[in-house]
Every structure is written in structure tokens, then in C-alpha cells.
Image (cartoon, rainbow, N blue to C red; front, side, top):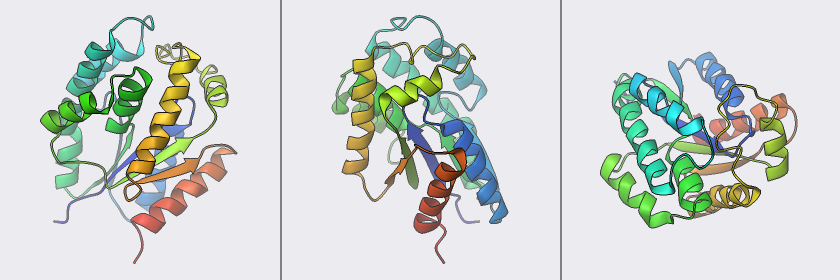
Length: 210
């Protein structure tokens, strides 16, 4: 059985990742693929428990190093319990966030640097990585405005200062610049349908060509 494909959707707060994961999953199912839609932090029982520690509570609940370790603990469980088994079954996996978020949030946003994140990634994840990463990009002020309309209590990162969010956006764009073969930056401004069409085009171009 052929191994499935792993697609990640990344971006700052309010970029619309969750909505676009659902829509892309429908597109791929229509194309005949079995699809698992998941998220980080979370995506498995253990990782979901860690998620609550990371996305709720005061902005200064954790120091950056502790936060980095918690994200990778959740990621390891997510990979072992959800992502790797699905790929081995030949399913396609779409994840709302993966390790690029850790690099952007902790490496750039919290200024831990790339090396700290890369070292833990090598130990916890190894050589595994996404087949395609779609980075939803929009101005920081617009993203935070959109995010403020949510009422799910998972707003710990949203409440970090504006300088953090600007470093975060710059980090995602730098990641894409460093890995153009894997990453596609997608304009997240416009309607939900317009953004979905851009993602659809990128996936078809990169993964669904005959």
C-alpha cells in the first residue's frame, strides 16, 4: 500500500486555518482520497490534554523553553497515535499546524532561535516532515481582529503583545523562503471561498498533478 501524504496548514492567529483544513479535506475526499483532518497542539488523547496547558491561561503561564518542550511532547504523541498510523494505512493527513508553528512561535516569536527548535525536532521527530506546507498569510492587525471574535477561551497566544505577533509573521515568511520546495505562502485576505480556491490550486499544482 502506498504511503499517504502529509499536508500542514500554518499561519498566525486568525488566519482561518481550521476552516480551510475542513474545506481541503472535502476536496481531497472528492478526489478519491481517504483523509484524516487533525490539529496541533492536539490530535490525540495525550496531546489534547497538553493543548489545554498551552492555549489557555495567562500569556506568561510558561517560560519559552518550557513551552517549547510541551509542544514537542504533544507532537510526539500526535505523531505516534494519529499521524504515522494514518500515513501507513495510505491515508492523507491534513494538520492545522505542525512544527513550523513551533519554529515561528517559540523560535521567532519568543526569540529562542532556530537552533533550539531544530535540535529538539531532530531528537523527537527525526527526518520526518510534511509533503506540503501551506502558510496562510495576512497582516497582523487583521489576524488579531478576526481572532478576537472567537469565544472558545483558547486565547493565550492571542493575548501576547503585538511585537510577538509581528515576529511570528516574519518567522513564517522566513520559513517559507528557506524551504520553497515544501512551503507555499497563500494570501489569506479575501473571502473564505477565495482563500479555499488558492489552497486548492496550490495542492493541485504540488501534489495532484497527473
